[in-house]
Image (tube, rainbow, N blue to C red; front, side, top):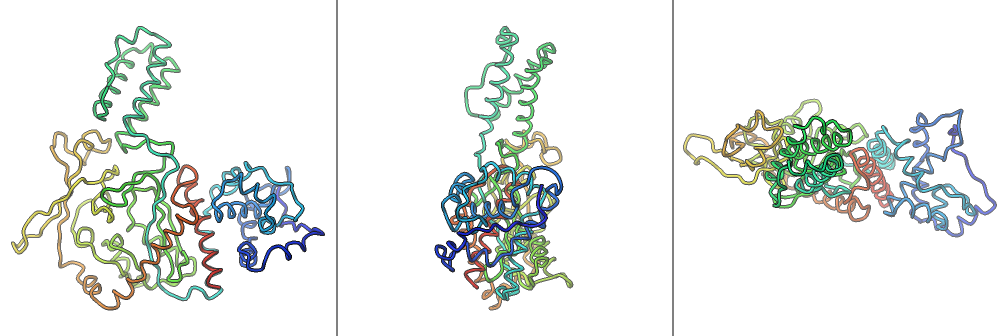
Length: 485
């Protein structure tokens, strides 16, 4: 049960806070800056108001999570520190003598039960942007956009490792039911070639499925289904992990990561005005429209957008030229993605960091080559080559890879006469001046990772990643507002 309003605790020792905690203390300043009652109002529908045991204050629970983010400590440590740290007690609304602390597991339940299905990311960003606007901190009409990557909490298993693990579990169940089956199973694969391991796995399944009596044994059937599920996932993504939402993305042609991307829009004053969280393989450019819309919905006036070449795609140029909701796009054209005429634009995504295209299954091209000659009356093309061995066993190969083909390519026809207006804008002094502010968002990305621990996910799944992003961005924005106040 939740009280209709937050209770205020009184104590004869409350004056100790004025003696011990200085006026410029970070937590005191945050308490003075933010009216956290909006958390109570937002979560009212998550509690019963007339039945059950009295619940912990949602404001206090949220403040625990905020402390955890600001100081980058665990659930256990943040609760333990609130036992003796007077600034923590003051921030949490506890009396100085209070030693009746919550159980750290309550924070996990609060995240899962109370914050579930809440758009915490937009809620918290919107709150901080509103504060910044009210205090006159945000005066610019420019947003800077970029994406930062966050590694998954768990590393991906290699396809060979997970196949061998599931095959071993299946064999163990088989031997427990009928040890004579050993002589009928195919020889184990002894090398690390994925195709050989896939062949062995399929052969193992064929033998088991040919024996209906064994295949219908509940324990064996369970292991068969697990192996089939892993087999399907590997043929599709080549990645298996505890973190089912994480995907392989690329920071450069040779540098990959496994995890998520947070796409950020930031004002010239370094206040984050919008953010979206996606899996790691998603491109940066397609997120621009949502970042602009969110920034405007949060109260930001957007007249100029500054970004790198990832945001200079055709769709974004058209969006910027919209008569009603357009803006000035300060992003350099990349001949490969912006000037090219290509098919299946909605399927093949361009990764500007690696300079390569990524197929619908998440596989990056392994090399590229320019075809055609200049001045010959025909347009040149950039041809991207994919690993045909992956294409042969990909579950999405139908309609993408022709059976028996020795190569898989994707071509972009280069037409330099297109987007001439944007190209001319690039040469102007105004473009060069406005593009100089882009470094600010690189510094913000570094702050999120190195100060708030945003380089690694705290839990599994997109929902948890969005929640972590919401708390980190809220803390970063609040600290920035305090600095500029």
